[in-house]
Image 1 (tube, rainbow, N blue to C red):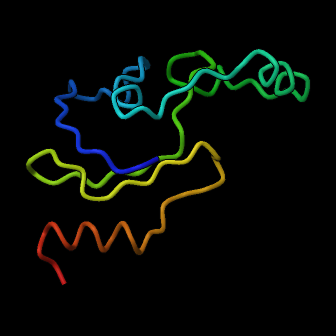
Image 2: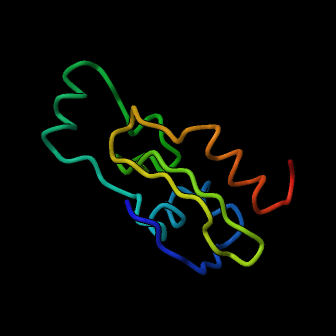
Length: 101
């Protein structure tokens, strides 16, 4: 996912509402397709029972560092759930916007 600048005003606790407002706003939301759902269920995996929404909707693995002006200064997003942001890059981005050493 390429870096884009967003100015979003999300409602408080949008990430916990079960409606995925934050994930949808940041374009990292998806619904598990029927074939994948069937494969998961065949192995006894019940994703919907593990989500706040009770559905097969999920967010992609994503990390955003957003400054006080609402500008995204660092972003990582990948549809492969096994990939995650490099912690050192996230820490460096936070330090850059806070002036920390």
